[in-house]
Image 1 (tube, rainbow, N blue to C red):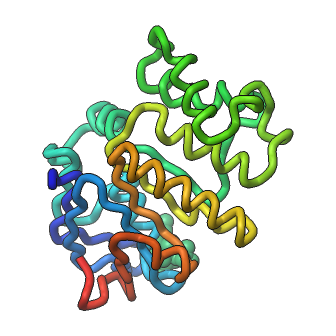
Image 2: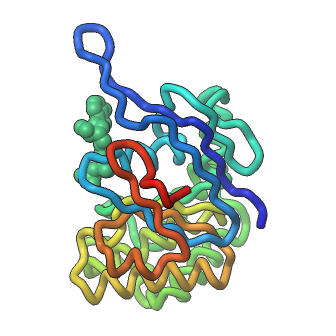
Image 3: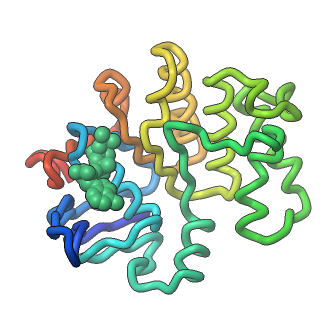
Length: 229
Ligand SMILES: Nc1ncnc2c1ncn2[C@@H]1O[C@H](COP(=O)(O)OP(=O)(O)OP(=O)(O)O)[C@@H](O)[C@H]1O
């Protein structure tokens, strides 16, 4: 299986200056391969979001090496890092962060526009097809406030797929949903993973949903539990 992402000895600390230096990730090693559907669990404060943000090139590590799609990422300048992020990564968050003034379709198109600075030919049709795939074609013109929580999160998942990423990083994507809607949204991500071979890494507090993943990583105090990675 092709490697999508590799972490070698990733460390992250906060502080310095007046504040004491506190290390929250203590040398993380991890390889994610194409087509995996991985759950990331662990107690509150164990470093899950920090790790996800480092993988997503949203925060720099304090040490270690990060390779995405064969490219060493932590050494890139801002512009190159942004390009790599737009090209290979998709994001889903607990709170969907859809832009309230724009329709579902326009929200899905946002990363395409951000990545290319324009909408390439066929972009609208592709976005419409993605919305259709998740049962939302009739809602394409609606603004987020006119959609249910589950529908909003499905739009956010489709938006994460708009640039055809190889890896989707999801930080508690079902944390804000009722049990049944959470299960449906999780199943949708699994379906996309199976059908399109997109790799997913999903932070969740829900042990039942995590058990449906092909691999579960357990982060405790900034280290993987012995059986992981
Ligand atoms: N910008 C920051 N400055 C200082 N400390 C931070 C910063 N961001 C995170 N931390 C600390 O790093 C640790 C890990 O936080 P993180 O949010 O990654 O944990 P988590 O496992 O995602 O927690 P939760 O499950 O509650 O979301 C915590 O102790 C947190 O206080």
